[in-house]
Amino acid sequence: MPSSHPSLSRRSFLVTALAGGAAAVAMPTALAVDQASVFRDAAAEFAVPAKLLAAFSYGQTRWVDHGGHPSRSLGYGPMHLIDGAAVAAQRAAEGKSPASAVDTLSRAAAASGIAAETLKTDPAANVRGTAALIAAIQRETGAPVGAETDPAQWYEAAATASGLAEVSAQTQFADDLLTDLRQGMTVRDGNTTFTVAPQRVGTPAGRAKVTARGAAAKKPSGPIDAPAGLGVEWVPAPYEQYGPDPGDYGNHDLAFRPRSPQLTHVVIHDTECSYELGLQLVTDPTYLAWNYTIRASDGHIAQHLQTKDVGWHAGNWYLNMHSVGLEHEGYAAQGYRWYSEAMYRRSARLTRHLCTTYGIPMDRAHIIGHDQVPGAKTASIKGMHWDPGPFWDWERYFTLMGAPLSQGTIGRRPTAGEVVRILPGFDGNVQTVEGCDGTCVEPGDHGTNFVPLRTAPDASAPLVADPGLKAGPSTTKVSDIGARATAGTEYVVAQVQGDWTAVWYLGEIGWFHNPTHSPTARVVRGRRTVTPKAATAPVYGTAYPEASAYADPADVQPISPLIYTMKAGQSYVLSDDDVPADYYRAKTFSLDTPGDHINTVGRTKYYQVNLGHRVAFVQAADVVIE
Image 1 (cartoon, rainbow, N blue to C red):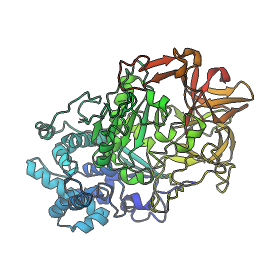
Image 2: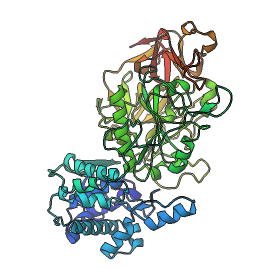
Image 3: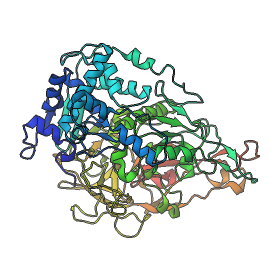
Image 4: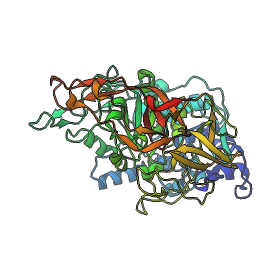
């Protein structure tokens, strides 16, 4: 079960600073971050507002110190000071062109007189060095300094000190910093809440000067589909015929979305490679394409497809037809090092734009991980992907979208038959995750996005099985999603026993630890559920139309039940009652090919349900809505 205390490798510097070193004795329940001596002392020493420093750290790392270990962009400490020399050396060793990263570590060392190695390993020194750097930049701009000055007057200094190379990233960082100050900041880590109260902030001075830096930069070109100011780059995926056969083409399909097929889902991926290699792959006509790639270091976004066209990213043609795919630079087994705050924020802005533009519901049934995409048939299940993995912070992501997953929930003990939404938190939710080969997951107590499901209300009971993946109980292997209920997903309660709650899951019962004093799920009111009409109800990985809907019998797609079934007496959450029953045929390069690039729409009524870790579909004729 998860730890109930803040991770000592993450925020212990704040606990120590605020609780007078008593972190190991009694853990405080609420801490005002801007009152911590680590920020107040640096503010007084370098004449920088303490709240500004606290918000700067929140925007960089959410007040996390990784014990002297760098992020994947080689940033250190709670202020994420970037070792530019190490970045250059790393890229040279990998045969890559020099990066445009800002060497904030060296600049902070010069401004503060603190050795770079100390800035890397000592959180208090890291804050002091950053305060010195921000103050030095502020003085260079001629703007006023002082611990009591309005943080809005520090806009240019904060943007410059962020370490982000692109002007659009700098402006978003500084904009978000002021927004965070106005709205307040809260992080829950176990039973401890870290906060900065909302405050009045003036109109940002210096914003025009920052945005002017990008005036000469290359303007976005191509059919960009993104919110204004996000600075999305157009890196087109090729649509080319590379062989004599009409089917020898790549790396996506032309279509007419959202008119046909409809857009219903956003799929979150990680690249399992570097950003640069990801761009090489997506521009290879013999490979496959997705819609966007987001860089880890600064959240820079490249768009590859027009939204109307179909990428080959989900591993399930039905979901390809109806989804937009976002690839995030990183590795699922090491997501806590790759998934940066800049990446989360810029990706969340993009996803919100896509959902509002195309009418995609902003919930966890429609914004899903690649790990939630079902196999189209039973034989495909074992080969389905598991990214973005257990270290993707879904709760943070939805909060940044302005659609917090706690909305519409009630914090009370559930009863049988009610619907619960899994909300374990992230930072304090430390679950057992073992490396795929003993090395792919570094040791340490890292937050996770799931609760494990067991066969009995006992922490030593076996994990539930996923027969589509393998025979026997699931494991704690990082890639084994069989017994994981992830944040934001919803299930129907089967039983409650003490601090344990059981839900219907893959046709069986799965128990998870859900103590009243620190719940890992919350009750959802008003949800509809489905239950089988007969002894069992088949479930599917697609929602293809009936055979009679096709003009050409050769195009008929099999409607294959998966290995899982719903059993009588069980209930599952109905997450979508308006599922398109269709099949978009795209088998040849030319749009002029007779009978190709046509969407066949059927009359079969499907529902989407949350069956297990992955979503699934059922036919309305087989179930009853409750």
